[in-house]
Image 1 (cartoon, rainbow, N blue to C red):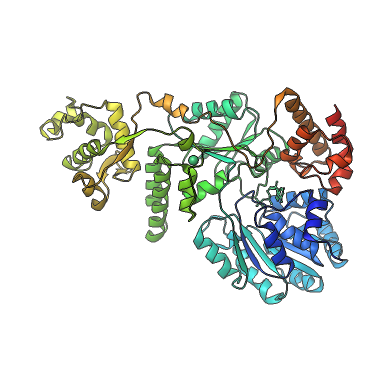
Image 2: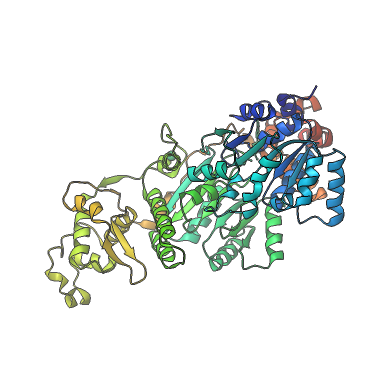
Length: 608
Ligand code: ADP
Ligand code: ZN
């Protein structure tokens, strides 16, 4: 009798029940069906192919694009007592030969393989001689030529369907956008398969967006307040900013390391390794860092500069909190950054259609950042979902900014832009509105305009803020090539406002901007999905002791601590304080193999 999916869930993985659609997907694949699984990061995709592979006869073949990812997953499976192996270019000939011998002998349950390795003709021929339970295609969005993770070898994977027509295939991705989903189905010839879609919500991530004022101080304040000893990722746009920020954090007592394409390969590898195998390390990186890193306990992701689009923002922030415990995503939003990015896109090479698409995506992102609505609602709606209510776990929900009817202010600002010929920057326009007597005002005779001095109800700082908000709302466009001159956006957007047919809501104008910028990364309660919360010093202390023990065991094997136990398991141990192996076996994440291997050590630590 082959084992059932729930046997394996309890015995091997140590989990009490399936999550979301896992059971349905697993049943479908065990019965031989093809599937496309769309689930957010941390949703529990791996079980959807690992369990069917262990239920069905033969070896499961998992196509995975990144060696680091493969190594971690193989190690995690071995810790669970599963016979897993990897084949990729990092293996020496001897090692690869051994894996191939084991394949031939039927001694492997799960084989992780790089796509280019799989496509070698010898490899496919070898697989034809093995008993295969299923093919899993992980990170399936790598087939998309439009995405930034495009891998040409993925395009050839349709061949699996032709050469192994009776073996079920499961493609998995955390990509939320619809065009990419369509492309996966087309390219992998998955038309006959079932598509399983889950909500892309990541309830344990708290989204925080704050106006960028003094970015490094803001970051420091945020970390000191929320993430004193946590590991996390800080994204910056340029290499120089990466270096500066990493140094700054290190100077302030954080274990921060830089990561960007300009560093020597061995330095990059070393920094990445420390991030994975140590605790409390912060990596400051350009966006090149993160894909293929499965570290479940990344507690925060901070963007010092704007990501490229809402899709990128979702993907990059999604690297936080895979384990379901409360995590933060902080973005410092500067409207000037948006202008710079816009001119970078316009000045870059590439065809006009693509540029236009990128600009539209940037505009959507700017709209998202500058809106006062619940972040999660806006995000999920962008991906085609209809979230029921404001989430209570984002800056907009926890710390709502007051808005006011700014229609008259907007009309004054827009008409001032129009009457001065749509070429001056916010500083000069402000001078005109408040009736300033400057050399430029006199030089251009702007004191004769009908808008001269009509805006004395606001201070200069407040007018600057109004202009920024009008740019953010897409009513004004900033010319970044020249001197930051402002012009009216599309006539059909501005005209109704100027005619008074459409009102404009503005965020409350700040008296002291920095104070508010800091305020908006909030206190509020943080949420996690069903996460146990430690109470009292004794539980805290025990949790720290368990972490230390885990670290010692991991160091001895040179593996990341989380492949031994996730934080969720340690939290549950610290709360339940089991006194026997039997009691310990019901803790989530404690399967038979880990119980046998680590049970005694952890019981002793619990006893104290
Ligand atoms: P994904 O690949 O979708 O990002 P993973 O497969 O890595 O997600 O799972 C995310 C986390 O959820 C892991 O810590 C995993 O052990 C845990 N997990 C997955 N399924 C279950 C389950 N049924 N019960 C408890 N924990 C689970
Ligand atoms: Zn919200």
